Length: 193
Image (cartoon, rainbow, N blue to C red; front, side, top):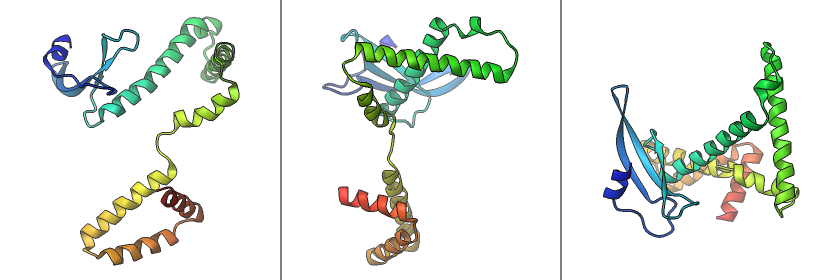
């Protein structure tokens, strides 16, 4: 990885990643296409980290985004396993009882995290609740509806060779047949644009 990094030209400026290189990885005698995405190490500015993705269709930003989410999940499980000792506390064999115990351990972790956040962060819990939906949002409903409708319109124009006027009439008729909440969401999107 160091050799690949040193042989390739890096991105300059405030890019989210330094370098992206398509590679082939050998596993069990099988060649697998992959992508190495080099990102700057936040703790050591002159150092870098590598994220390896076998889904070469993903953009570099998506790879970094997915890795960030997975990393948080791994830290959560590691903290639960190391500090809350779920295995030592319960030694039953019932699957339902184990699931209940794990749920209790996870709930304890969440309560401890909230308490730590309230004690060490200037933000209040209310601000945390307002920020939470933004963190979890990937794509809005209205945006996903617009993507679907745009794809539908492009397909109709391609296959049926209709004019722009006919397409606009078709679109208006299609939208009128949608449920009211979908129509309102699309109207808000058009007003915002």
